[in-house]
Image (tube, rainbow, N blue to C red; front, side, top):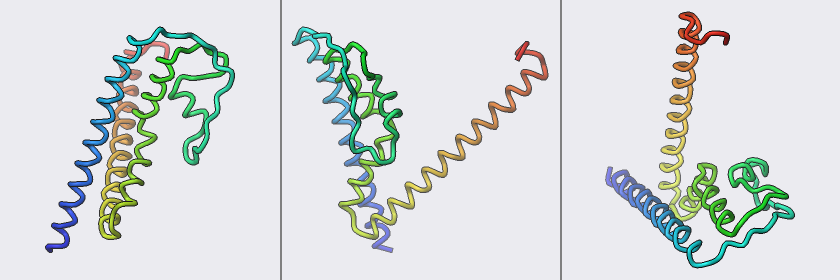
Length: 151
């Protein structure tokens, strides 16, 4: 029983560290993005080419879509910083932080964290299914009552 309590305390501690790190990083990036553009004159350039490297699970086009960067598009340094902020804020990169935490855990902690993550992912899927079912039923009802004419 004491091992389980100890694991729960360590997991809570790891979650608190992750939350603190994410909050701190968000605040630092936000302050930087607010102050930095004021201190320099924005120079506009054109993107000659865009290269995405190191992505294994996320398609290059998805990363480019999130960032808003594309070849031939004009940009300023502030827009590049904004693109980095958008990429960091996307949920696609949560797994990288999670993997770093797992590297520092014992086998028991890793097992508990992975089981919790699996539970969270199953809950997310169930919420998405419920939302889809609700929207489908709502649209059917609207069509039946002719609230959505011509659809």
